[in-house]
Image 1: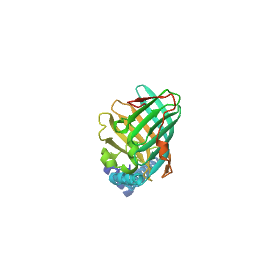
Image 2 (image 1 turned 90 degrees about the vertical axis):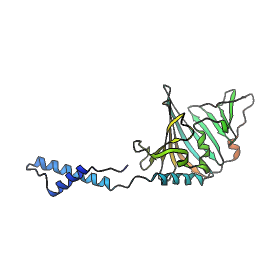
Image 3 (image 1 turned 45 degrees about the vertical axis):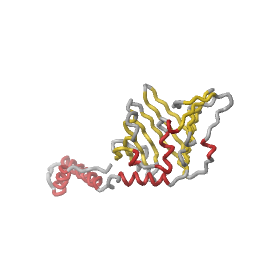
Image 4 (image 1 turned 180 degrees about the vertical axis):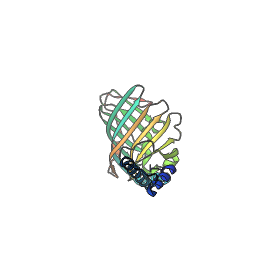
Length: 248
């Protein structure tokens, strides 16, 4: 966020440049020099680039992802809540229309995958695989399935605005905030970190119960070849299918 100069400070700076207030000792002159330097830094801040145009930034992100057919990225998922913290990582694949695959590798292998019709959650070695129709899916990861082709941040996030109080992970990125429509009973705020190339580098979901889920996306590869079979799941032999709420 560009620095904002104080009118009082500016008037005092002008007085300094005019020679007031003056000092008779070298100690006072040193103080004046330091104040002059501060004034110069303040003026430099005023000349900084203006705050981003939120609507233009949102449109740029929309256009970036709406033109993609597929996306592959490395992800880190961080969760804080209910007196616990959890960090997991793996690879995410997205493909139009509405397909996604979250392949967790660390600290434990697990799979969350959807072909756009049904979603599955499975932990290798478990005797159960959970399944639910996408239309009934209540999962914080599910909106990302529709990022490609249907992104419209201003429509989906109420009160979309700049979040100058949140430091981005990387210099040059900006952070936006908003409230997802239709999730007001569960989510209090979503933060989006956007790179200069209009990619989403981080998504932070603050829930009304105080818990926080954060996704960090790196090594994003766009329009990669991904077969539709990659988004389908067939439970291993001997695995029971349980229909209902999916896992974390």
